[in-house]
Amino acid sequence: TSTYRFTPAVAGKYYLYGSVRWQTSTNTATRLDMSIYKNNSSTVLSSRNNNTDYSSVNVSGIVDLDDDDYVDCRSYQNTGNTVAVSEEPQLTFFGGFRISGV
Image (tube, rainbow, N blue to C red; front, side):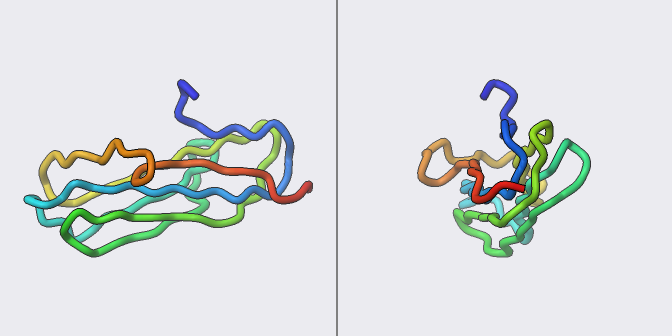
């Protein structure tokens, strides 16, 4: 959506997933993080990749969501420089779907 958030219409357990491909070929990173936040306040899923060259970081898991919750995905790199994120949809994505009711 235009808000870059996933908002469920129905309460339940949701499988959330995401991936970011950092284009770090010339900027060595020792820390690539990715987190999914719930309602802009708490991290509900997170992961880290410590590789340095064209690295992806992925996150996935099951989260309880109410019908008025929302989640968004954020990523961080520590090269100290601006690093591009791949725009290829098979390398950088975020989504979710309901797997059961409350």
